[in-house]
Every structure is written in C-alpha cells, then in structure tokens.
Length: 288
Ligand SMILES: C[S@@+](CC[C@H](N)C(=O)[O-])C[C@H]1O[C@@H](n2cnc3c(N)ncnc32)[C@H](O)[C@@H]1O
Image (cartoon, rainbow, N blue to C red; front, side, top):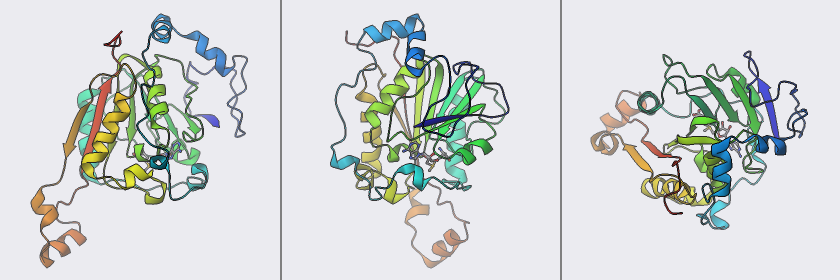
C-alpha cells in the first residue's frame, strides 16, 4: 500500500506528471503503471538486471527473529503523528556531521522511514530529497522533503521508484522495525546509482513492542553486526563501514547520587550512543 503526496514543490520527475494523490490502496493514477516504470531503466539499470547485483544471497533473519510483540499493522501504530524527537542532541549532531562529511551538495537523496524532522545539514543544498514514512502528517511537516510517500515496508517492500535514481539513501533510528530487511536492502540497492551509498544509523532507543525480536534480544554489538549482515546479504554492496560513538564510560557508569541528579537534570553527558553502518553500491559485483 503506497500513497504519494506532493510538498509545495513540483512533482518528482520519476512520478508521471498526471499522477494524482490518493489515500486509497492504489498507488497513483497514471498512464504509466508501476510495472512499466521498471522498463524505464537506464543502461546501468539494465546491466544490473542481467547480472547478479542486487540479488539476495541468503536470509539473515529466522521467522521467529522477525516477530514483533505488537502484531497489529504498523500503519495503525503510526496513524497519529508523533511530533517528538527520537534521539538526543548528541546523536543528532554526530549524524548531521556524518552527513556533512559523506553526502555531497547537489545529490538526490531518499530518506527512508522518515518523519517530521530532518538531520541533514541545513546549509547544504541537495538536488532533491524524497521522504518515505508511515505518517503523512509528520512527513508533510518535514522542511527538507521535496516529495514524500507513505508505504508500509512490512507489507510490501517494493519501492515504486526508478532504478539507479538516488545518490544516497538514509535510514535513521528505524531499521529495527523492518521485518523483511533483506528485501528492503535489495530494493535500496536497486534505486541507488552505482557508487551511491546507504547510511543506516541507530541508537539504543526503540518502540520495544514494534522492534523485531532479533533486535530486542540483541546487544549493541550484535545490532551493529546485524545491520552489517543486512548489507552483506545483498550481492553488490561494498564491505560495510561501521561507526560507533558511545558516551564516555565515566558519564554512563557513575552511579553516584550526584551523577544521578545531574543526569536527571540533563546536566551530565549521558548522550545516546550513536551507531552507523554505511556501504556503497559497487559498480560491478566483485564475484561474477
Ligand atoms: C523512530 S521513528 C524515526 C523517524 C525518523 N527517521 C527520525 O530520525 O526521526 C521510526 C520511523 O519508522 C517508520 N516506520 C516504522 N515502521 C514502518 C513500516 N512498517 N514501514 C515503513 N516505515 C515504517 C515510521 O515512519 C517512523 O517515523
């Protein structure tokens, strides 16, 4: 189920200009059906269709590992907007700096599993930022998005976006909610241009009932490894790079009453740990 919504700016060129907004289960009304959009692949896209690039080599999660405690559809859980910030300033600043370092001005960026806030550096101008999420009201408020669409990735992992059309895909503090991460990462691979990157970041916060069991039962170390494996299960991603920025042990482990009060008042650095895993879409699969 997917709905596209325009922000004030013109329609994204990947979306046919006669597209109409609809809140029904139909994607959008257009003369070009989504399946035909697939046929508008450029040369690189055609090549990667013939090769093994983008294929899922193996499943990472077991059936039990994909289970959530709250089994109601995710769209119900996100039916009402949450105008909150999911991570603290320390995390956001680490992430924005990472984007500043990695994402070039003028790029086309897909913000997967987005909300009303953007962590992209304000001073950088990108060619286009497309947002995806589950709550249209949140996404409509996000000042960085030129376009957005709503889609439950646990229902259907196909992204109705042209192949090889983004320089970067970002996914912030959300990967733990994906029940079919292998398919989602393969789709991200498809929509990335050769050399394009996927940046997945997360902390230790989560909507516990909506996170998959492998994540809930994991440790900080195993969660990083899990995301690394999501990349590695798709043919053609480069070896993932991992980044960890955890608060100083003194700030975390000082259990004195003074430290506790300071932390309560937000006066001691108890910043959310920051983890990111990054890999690139290789120009050609390494083993062919
Ligand atoms: C914790 S919020 C993070 C939002 C945003 N990335 C940020 O940094 O503030 C988790 C997001 O994951 C998205 N999400 C959760 N389950 C989803 C699903 N099944 N399909 C698509 N998106 C989902 C929701 O849109 C929600 O906004």
